[in-house]
Amino acid sequence: MLRVEMATDPSTHLFWITSRAAGIVALVVASVSVSIGLLMSTRVAGRRLRGPDLRVAHEVLSLSTMVAIAVHGLSLIGDQYLRPSLLDVTVPFVSGYKTVWTSLGIIAGWTLIALGLSYYARGRIGAQRWRLLHRFTAVAWLLGIVHALGEGTDAGQAWFLAMMAIVVVPALVLLVCRLVGRRSGLAGGDGAAVGSARVAGAAGAATSAGVDRGGGERGSAGAAGASVGVDRSAGVERGVGVERGDSVTVA
Image 1 (cartoon, rainbow, N blue to C red):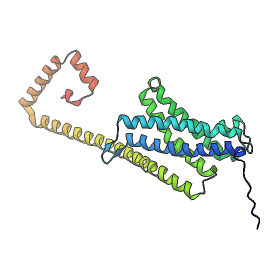
Image 2 (image 1 turned 120 degrees about the vertical axis):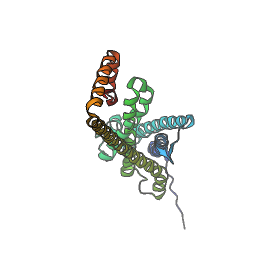
Image 3 (image 1 turned 135 degrees about the horizontal axis):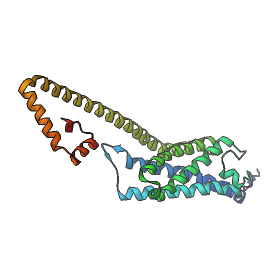
Image 4 (image 1 turned 90 degrees about the horizontal axis):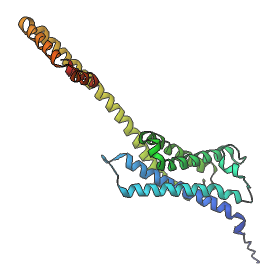
């Protein structure tokens, strides 16, 4: 029996294989980077994991993700089967090949690159504003996952799904913990505000009761003391009391 083996020239698929490998690397590295970022900003077992080593690792992984995304998109231009243009791989909704999934990947890629580079301009952006923008990294990462599952050649393979579970599930768990913890913190803040209001109200009621019971001489003494307090609280002290908005200064 004659056995014929047909050899496939890998050079004809080199750019596609390169793009495919770079996309997988980008997904894995981005997931690990997101996990480390969430570890540094989320309380795990009652404390936050911070340190220079984690920051360096997070930065290196973020830069690696940007490089992998660039290789993933630009290497497709050399593919002889799809033959995409530069606009096809850089501008959303231009490519005619799986337009929705491709566009989601382009949006996710540009967002991750822009937010990653914004770290080096946070001084000009402002720390508070930069932290707000940086939260959208998780959204871009999720869009990248949707892109990989919707358009990835290996999306239906068991090894690909297992790999995604290993790197994506921990990041998703940390993201949920972060969101739940933030809501709990807001609820706690509201509860504290209500509690403070109740204490202030009780203190005001007690003060009013003391005045009513004081009567006569006590009331006169209180009025005299109040007038003396007003005379002494001139100028700067009165201004400080108003700026602080502290009800104690009124008593």
